[in-house]
View 1 (tube, rainbow, N blue to C red):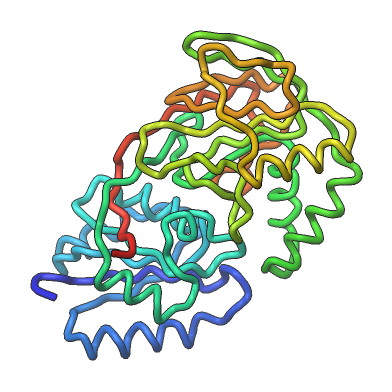
View 2 (spheres, one colour):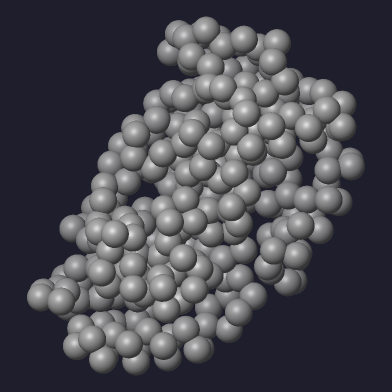
Length: 301
């Protein structure tokens, strides 16, 4: 482990499990490996500039983030300008980025990846200037994210209840989509902007997505009755919908699926927004652009 020095950042309230055992495990195993380390906790402000002098003083090379997608996104954004490798210990309700990267949920296996995996350049993206690295969206899934954030309990079961509750009363939203080569209007159940292939928990929504191709996968589930909507969404999850060229999108389809490095949306119906699973303010206009190979994520070998 020549030259390796680790900073662990733990979100103590992500997911449903206590993090005391996780911290003890990381301390024990990192000490046994003879690697110097330092532990900090995530901050609600998402401002990690206070870590910059610590990273410099302790010659940190690798940052291990124990939390969900929102924590990962905030930490990477706060430390992205530094020469660091980032690893993930999936502790959130969805863990979409970690699972898309092949990082196991089990702490022991995630530590193995963190200590012995391969750092690779990975894309992120900007939504109205705000950084994201996993998946963001407008409409139904954002409404679920907003309601989920207000619940006293976290975890998959709480999230699933919010999905079911919102599905039967869900509305549709009007958007204007501006691509480099095409503009169109659509009424949609939701729009996903995907860097990873999934919402989390292996619930795939963008099966062709790559974390390092310089493109974002855009999935638009258009207005249709709820039964057809379920069937068409299952087709998307199973990978049965082909990608359309972003220069000639057939807007008559039930699901529009295409790739682009940038897109502008006019949010005509004030659809709610989430960024990497965390609720965000509702914008009138959304400017989205990929941020190619902007950080190094440690992947399984």
